[in-house]
Image 1 (tube, one colour):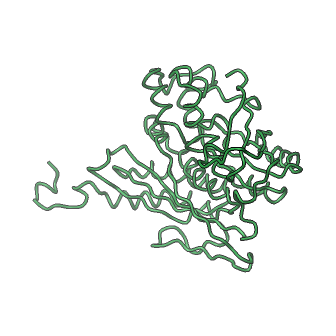
Image 2 (cartoon, one colour; image 1 turned 90 degrees about the vertical axis):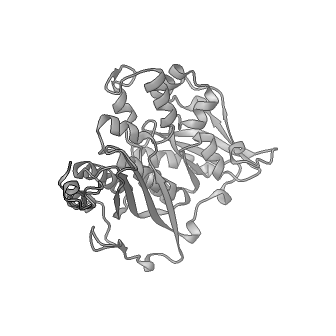
Image 3 (cartoon, helix red, strand yellow; image 1 turned 120 degrees about the vertical axis):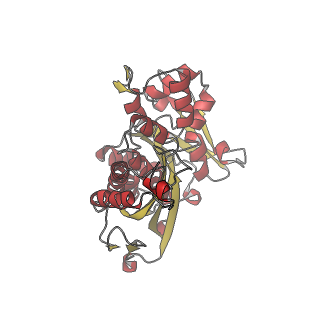
Length: 362
């Protein structure tokens, strides 16, 4: 029996919310958060609102873009392994790489972390990852919220989400309206599973396959847990650099729904994206999931990125330049296919991208 219960006086702490631990978490995360900044940021971490001075003289007609996302059940792997310093990178990637699809430069991000119990060291590790992701993306971490939910969430459980804001010049806004027949599709390689399909991956590898997260997997050259926690590649700076150097029509961020499903979202009616599976070989983790779970190709391709994390749609005469820019930035890139006219109306986005052929050695 606690002292609170003995005295008959209820307290917030006795109910499971530790304000002191929350304050300690803020102190521990501050050094990491302060590293993810930009010159436009006013003030520091800890205020009621984050302040960002938008320098309007930099743009003629600025358009703000915003995106909100989370990490999904990849967090279950992090929690099982008690490793929390990389999933923040995944969180940032899911947000900023949605922003850059329309050509927007990510400016700042705010996070929301819900926990069953505040453990300052764990919160600091999560924010360390978020700050690292923001640094990779060139945006500021403008604050956030950590909420303790005792009785609703288990003490070791947490969930994360974030909202990002970016800006793009109105006449440089990218999108389906710019796409033309003959445009070339440039694939950018994924770093692994990224942050989608983990419910199926965990079901196949951990439940059906009974593979331990700590176990070494020869095909990966590391443990299963290390493979599954590989951070999502962040493409924001690479996409912005490419758009500055070449005639980019639009980008497609390959997340839930797979390659064809997401690429089809940026292909207008009357056109179709022809994709060649023979142009790349998916990483071993995809083959392992397919084999262990007897997952058929259509299910794999609508659930996972299959090794392609971002696609640039470029003017045909710009393909070589685009590949050169990405190669110089150490981004794996190749010609994935092209855009052509379609005899079908393509009412649904998923009908506007078609995968043909077979992957080598898959």
